[in-house]
Length: 364
Image (tube, rainbow, N blue to C red; front, side):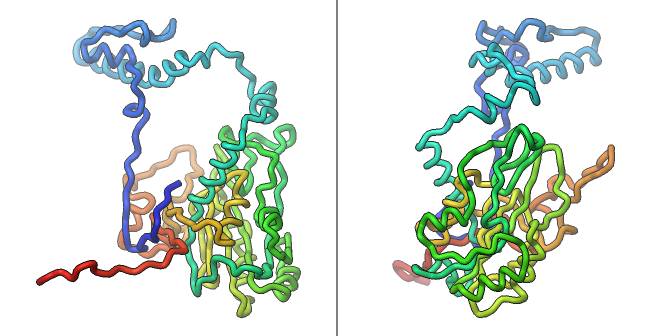
């Protein structure tokens, strides 16, 4: 997550450079040392059975030797840190059989970890829109909290759910983190004493009843994502629900909270007064959102992705056994330069109001 004190202009572009694993590590593999004419020391000796050595045979042998050196170097950067940390000598668990205890039953958190998770979730929350200063919520305002994504959370059960199961707060797959804390916005707002009229479904009739009793409307939508699977679309699960709320809205401000695993379509945003976006922020999602909504924290996140106007503006997933991606670097924001988007890469607002003025007018 990134944070900055003021809002970025939608017309601005920014770029970031990533450090590859090769340049990030200080470990020197035997092959890479040998390629520079240096002898590998004892600390970089590859595990027993690792392939090394030179081949002969002219140009073909030289190419094979160079390729083997590259592979040895890549393998070394993965294996050597594991060996030095003693990780490979620890008892391993069998996925799907004996990994439940170390993965899901062990509690490896502290109050400091929780505080850090909350701070990261707050800093990474993106304010996409805030017309008429709908946010932060007025003190004492009665809130209609609408939608399943605001209130519902069924903890992931490793004994019941597939390893790819995710929810609106964590990604499914090997990176999944199971937690016991209620991460919902409803729980966090109740803890702050906010008066709520809750409609915990994605149905319009009960939502309208809750809206009639409130000063402001907060509606939630979410989507899930998992390792090894493509999302079926870029729509939130509550896309139609949020769109209908916008069409039926009254004079009461409508705030939409989107819990997304990546880029999503935001057609419904045109009829919302304010929009907050959070990317799979974990167990402190609700607490962070409640802090932002009530003004205890100012949103400072910036979009790490471009939000397109339509799915046709993105690279579609490939369902074939052989896939050809010929766009090169023209992906993400690079592929939309000079073209309209819903919200550009790097966009994000804050509650701060500011203006520019000359300290000393320039002389011409």
